[in-house]
Image 1: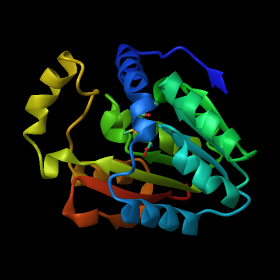
Image 2: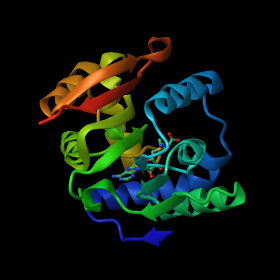
Image 3: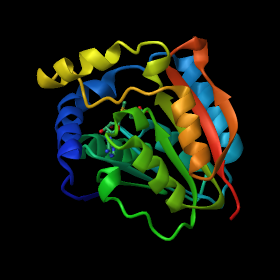
Length: 218
Ligand SMILES: C[S@@+](CC[C@H](N)C(=O)[O-])C[C@H]1O[C@@H](n2cnc3c(N)ncnc32)[C@H](O)[C@@H]1O
């Protein structure tokens, strides 16, 4: 496990918020186990034992740990050092040897040389100030044909009013940084950054949109 200090002011705010709730988050069951299991299964269909997977915003590591037996290596990155600590401890307890974790925000994590097989960002993009920049960076990380699996709160479609609540929630420390955009905005951004969307699922017609996108060959 490695640590880097959070970079931008937005990332520092996120680190503080998620650090504070990390222990509670780790004890909370997922909101819908069947939906979570289906997302894991869909993702697994796209993974193979020769892949190195990067999970950004890995939280307490449950998803990285679930996928680790099916790939060569999973590296989890999260802006919250406490989340990373918990993820690391859970992986050790589960005897997972091919998972590593790092405390860093996406904006300070190097894009690398465009050779990654797969990047996961689950319940993350709507929490990033420059979410379009994040999509561009993830595209740059991936090799042609590489996979980007995301689950994103597309709040503009069902809860546009949330935009008004977030600043107050952030001010009193009850909400993290949240960006409000639509599924259309997200898909447009993915396509503009060279992705084809291969799978889309909006469980129960809610706000969360699960997408599997593949980086087009140059
Ligand atoms: C809603 S939680 C989701 C955690 C996990 N992916 C899951 O599905 O349970 C969002 C996570 O993203 C992390 N996060 C927020 N902003 C981030 C950033 N800029 N870079 C990296 N991680 C970030 C938070 O610390 C938190 O662990």
